[in-house]
Length: 506
Image (cartoon, rainbow, N blue to C red; front, side, top):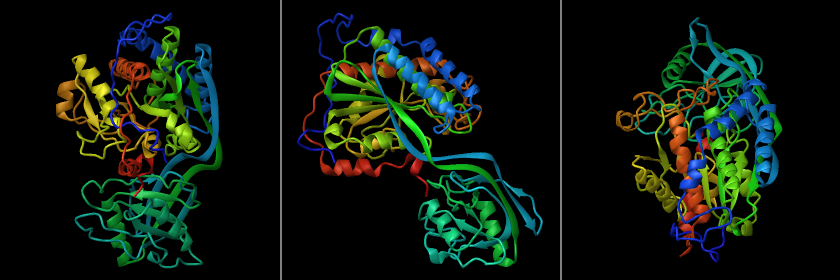
């Protein structure tokens, strides 16, 4: 818990008062010089380096792989040459990747293959067995989510001790891992989890188990899962489940942390982006784009000899794709006194999406109807929205729901904000009219796919969001930010409740 004696931001007055010129050429309060120095070719130089690393390392830069280690070494080298104090913070985590797509086929009565997907951290296996529905699947589904199927050990009949059997369980009520663990404890050799059935909970179900399990676990849509449940209730149905995965419980990875040599160490601005990709691709937009952008900003601040008022800390997080684990590890190992020195966090997770929108995290919750972040988050949001408005550019709010690496910061009461160009969400007609691009298509059609390579970028997005990122870093690093009344304890509780992101697995 952060001490209230050292006030948390309630109002972050981004008052860019005139300041004296420094020997390094900082004149007045404008970010224009830094924005001019942070260029798309500069960002692209780092992105091409990340692509080359992926090319040499099985097309991935995922934490726990040589591709990530090479990415971290590259970032360390650039930052050290620029004059930052660089440390590598190592930690272990459960590594997972899918080696081959899952297959689910009805054997008896004979039927077609189902569209399916392996749950993250599923075990490997090839199981042919009878389908046995959980005892409390809710079919037909209720109007609102209500299923707790598989959440208790008693929800599964004991499996056969002599013949393979496969549990079929509905989504809802608890984490997917709980369902899989209860089914395995009851003796089942594989688990199928199907979607619950309400609007928004009907498509092919995918998700994460949060940690390794030893049996195959795959997903189904509501239509396929409910039909399979009905068939299994009416008679014996046999299916074949095949998964091929790699699980390593104690894989090693790291965060790369770079501190400026100037600025107040009791007032630290943490500027973060996750460095890892998913295992299935090179991750050039997600999140090479954010990492390359803050790396370019760090380089140019050093080249321009800009002397920050606050200490700048650039952070490149590992294992974000495994569940925000790098940023969680970083925040968890901070003492209370160290937490109190961090006055804000900026997060840049995807800033080059091909079908982009200029999204700004809705720090005060007023635009998306979400929960507000810690006091000061709304003022950080305003730094970006005011910047875009001043450039004659529109911006859209995006939910401040803890999905990315700012989540662990807001959970301990540290205000945060940042930018986002869009992921798997679909661009609206109104957004297409404002920003260009294609309505009805994802912001990033290669999100978490092998095609997220150097061709999967919008240079216009990199330019516009890169300039905004430079402005935000400059403004908060050089402003006389004012900390006034303490944030109420309830605000911290609300902030902590937002965390979910990669952990939202119900």
